[in-house]
Each structure stands twice: as structure tokens, then as C-alpha cells.
Length: 119
Image (cartoon, rainbow, N blue to C red; front, side):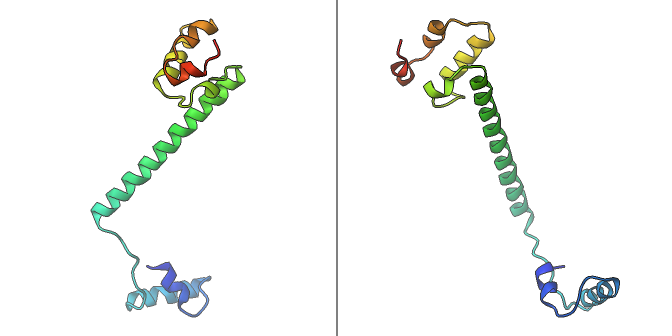
């Protein structure tokens, strides 16, 4: 049943008698059915929704990582633009492995990131 179409039909639609009236309208074919897309379009919509959801989850996790590092006093985001890039991952792996030497961590940066480093 198309909710937009039934909304334009005059009369109240809130109590039991009105529900029976709407049911009769549907039985007589006076209410246009809702649009149901073909199967391939539905699958494409599901895939796009899933992709959007996973992208949002990934961004949320990266932001959570950046906030966690900043709370710990590590301003990795100010030196490296991409928190999931190769150099950031190398620095994070070194931190997880127990590396605390700032010079050793700075040596993991290369290219543009190396130029930003004041060391």
C-alpha cells in the first residue's frame, strides 16, 4: 500500500473503522501499490548502503585512534596526514612493540613526513 497515496484520500485514518475503510479501498483496487524496485536494483541499493556503513565505521575507528593517541600525548595527526598510511602504521607498530624513543619513531617517517619533522 502506498502511504503517500492513502494520505491524500479524504477522511480520518486513525481508528479501527477507518482502518477497515482503508482495507476496503485496497480490496477494490482504489489505492496504488508502493513501488518495489527490481531485484538487481534492490541488491545494488543494499550493497551501496553496506559500503556507506562500513566507510562510516572505518572513519569512526580512525578518529577514535587519533583521539586515543592525543589523550596519550602523541600528536601523530599533526605530523602525518593519513592515520592509516604506511608511515603511521609503522610508527603505531613500533609503539605497540614498546618503542618509546622519539628519534627512533621519527626515523620511521620518510618523504614529506620527514620534511615536517624538526629533528
